[in-house]
Image (cartoon, rainbow, N blue to C red; front, side):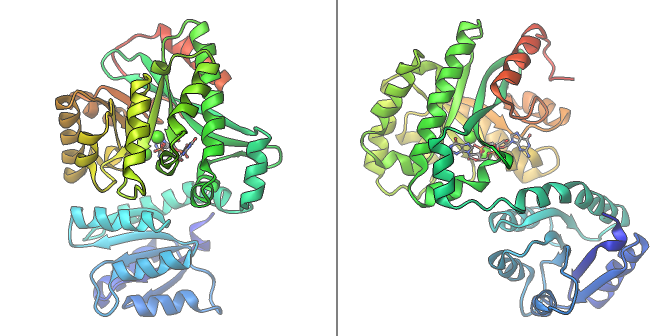
Length: 405
Ligand code: C2E
Ligand code: CA
Ligand code: CA
C-alpha cells in the first residue's frame, strides 16, 4: 500500500499540535487526513458512511469530554478494523498500559509515541503499517469458523502441534519446545490459534483440542527421544479444563499410551483469577505433579493473583509474558517486571523462561539478568515436526554460548 492511499484520523484536542501532526502527515505523502478535537467527534467521523473507512487513528490520551482511553474502548467494542497509534505527553508507564488496554480490546496497536512527536517516528510507524497490514488482512479476512466446523476439524485430526524451540541462554542448547496448535486446514492452509481457541474455550469444548494436541505432542516426544534428543515438550492447558475431576488421569493416560514418561511433558497453565472451582483445579494440578509432569505458569505478569497461585500450586517453571520481554530493552517498568520475575523464580526454585525473544539485544539482556531459558522468533518460529527435527539436527552441533546468528 502506498501512503497516498491511506486514510488517517488525527484525534487531538490541542489545535496547534493537531495542526503539526496533519502537516507532518502531509509531508510524508498522506493526502486523506481527517481530524477531531475529541473522542466524540472522532467516533462521528468513523461512523460517517460518506467517507472512506479510516485505516489508522492517531490518538492523544489526554482530552476533554471523551478522553483517549474511553475513545479506544468504544473503538474496541465496535471491532473496527483500524490500526491505532497512541500519543501522549504523560510518559512511559501510562502509554504502556494504554497500549495494553488497546491490545486487550483486540485492536491493532501500531505503536505508542511520547510527545513531542517527531517526523521520523511517524514515518517509521507508517512503514510498520505497510509491513503488518498484509499480515492483518490475512488473519482477519475469510477466516471465520463456526464451532461445528472447528469441532469437525478436530475430529478429523486436522490440528497439529507446531513446535517452537526453547533454548538454554547459557549453553545455547535446545532444551525443549512448546507445542502450539495449528489447524492445517485442507483449503485455508495453516490457521493460527486465535481463530479457534476463544470459541472452543467459551463453549467448553477446549478439551477435545487439548487431548488431540497432547496425543500428537506425546507421539512427537517419543519419536524425538528415539532419535536421541533429550528434550521436553510443553503443551498448553486451559484453566477451564481443570474443573473436570478426571482431567489429571486422562492426561496421564494419553502420555503413557505414547510410551512417554510424564517428566518429558511440561503443562503450561495461564494464571488467572477466574478459576471457577479452585479446589478441583488444585487437585488436578497436585495429581499431575504427583504423576511426574512439570507444571509451568504461563503468561506470568498478566494475571491477577500471581503470588498467591505460586504458593498454592506445585509449579516448576515460570514463563514471563512476552509483552514484558518485548519492552524489556527500552521500558523501565517492563525491565523491572522481568528482572523481579527472574529473581523470584530463582528464589522459589522455579525455572525462568522468557517468551517473545525477538532480538539479539533481548537475548543479551535476558542472559545478563540471569534468565535460564529463552523462546522466541530470534531463535525460531513455531514449525512442524519435520522442520523441528531438522532444526535439532543443525542446532545440536552448534553449542556456542551465543544465540543463533
Ligand atoms: P502462548 O501460550 O503465550 O504462546 C506463545 C505465542 O507467542 C505463540 O502464538 C507464539 O507463536 C508466539 N510467539 C513466540 N515467539 C514470539 C516472538 O518472538 N514474537 C512474537 N510476536 N510472538 C511470538 P500462537 O502460536 O499464535 O498461540 C497463541 C496462543 O494460543 C498461545 O499463547 C496459547 O495461549 C494459545 N494456544 C496455542 N496452542 C494451544 C493449545 O494447544 N491449547 C490451548 N489451550 N491454547 C493454545
Ligand atoms: Ca504457552
Ligand atoms: Ca504468552
